[in-house]
Length: 179
Image (cartoon, rainbow, N blue to C red; front, side, top):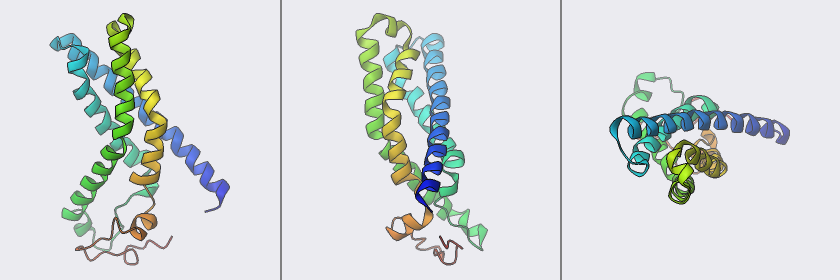
């Protein structure tokens, strides 16, 4: 792919990633508010559950929308096999990479959130604003990690030996991946 085409793809992915982040923010903020308002939890106790639900949401969106062209699951002639144990294991590995890649982003995100609600009384009363500040702080790092490591192109993943299709009878050549 030529450099200008790749830049266009990266910009498109970045905008989609940002949209997924906005949706993740909404899930995080709404879940946080529900736990605080209806269950009487403190903003600190409510944050882990709301953040986990937001991470699950953004992973799904990024997998199926933002980086859909980079899917790491091969296209096989035997779809039954691709949807069995191999598919589950591959999804679990991708989820693990996503969570790992976003660990530093989560530290940044939650650090900004924690500093905000613990130092400014207004942010303690309106933790959604602190969620937004934390989300923005971690987004740049998270995009780079997702783009460079989690949702790489099939041929890049296969070349580095992270996804070989071992035990499935599937190879890059048999999957039709000729990039």
